[in-house]
Image (cartoon, rainbow, N blue to C red; front, side, top):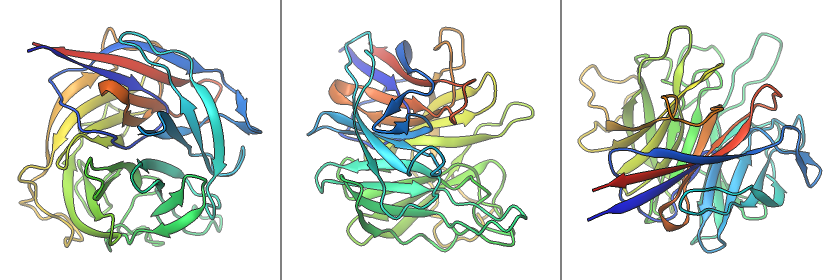
Length: 338
């Protein structure tokens, strides 16, 4: 039996649309970029931190982490033409501000195509000594028009502590967001470990979509970071109720970007643990793509978003931080297995 999985790396972190089989490797095929400073509907296209596909509409929802500096906190809708081996230029079709977002650092996005709404997250931040107030992490619900429609209750261990003694590290909170194929569970991944946890173990929390409350949480082991840099979870997409594709990113010039297939398996439920126990069992994972290796995309930038597109496609996206030295890119990959 022979099958093909096409992967598109686009501009944001995203959500699942349909379950898809996975194999041992994803191979880079193509990319397209967006010019620095390009505008749509009066806003600068940039800071694309997550992406999620709506199969009924055949369009992508792309989140910008603009903290109201180049326009409102917002998302775009876009069409991304794909073929087996190529990705055509992205066509942006809409822009919607997120109501009540303020100056949120929006990082995660998941489309709920059945309920016709969005889930989006901000990672939270701490005072910098200049009087800047604490911004707590959140996961909110929005209509497809950006209207506010509710919020999820975060577990007690996902707080931003003004004293900096526990909870989420500065600007390293809820980064990856994905909806399970059944539409009943929303998963949220932290970019880096909690302050009270080991430096290599971050957490992924499962929420019941109907009650909007967490019901489980698991440790995810990050790869060691290259010298002088940090490595974190920058995006994830659910393949099933228990399996995911997870992006790990160590930023900076010449970033290290890897994609892993992760599975909950026998992982310990850590929801009730303020600090991870010494005998914690983490999720299992397997490397499926090293985008930094020879043969990968050139250039390769700050990949933050991933979603499953049509016909087995997977779409990822890069966040250019509104920096002219960086690039907004969509990448296409192919995977083959005998």
